[in-house]
Image (cartoon, rainbow, N blue to C red):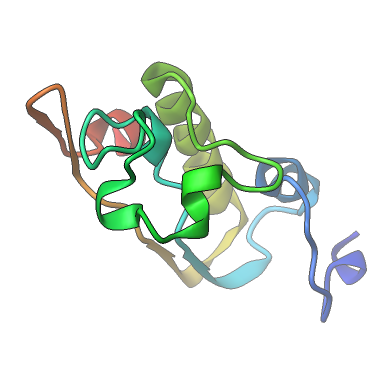
Amino acid sequence: MLEDFINKIINDDCLEILKQLPDRCIDLVVTSPPYNLKNSTGNGMKDGRGGKWANAALINGYENYDDCMPNDEYAAWQHEVLLELVRVIKDDGAIFYNHKWRVQAGLIQDRRDIVA
């Protein structure tokens, strides 16, 4: 029930919570999902140097998410989240999905693997 979520902070799996919401019930979504940085070949995340993230808590991973999924699984997960966001957003609502391009094995990933 939508009333179960109003005026509450919910710390849970976003996809599982989204699936509990009715269609077209949300006015605005602002999100910046994990970037899967520990699966990156750049910035030293995999080898522990951290690059520009060296002093960030992320170098040790999140409490419940290690930010290191295989890319195809990560893209499928984020695509599923976006589909749920589109389902729950009102017709006159807006979704602000902040994600970044990144270089992987010398090639730029423009995130079409997520939004296509």
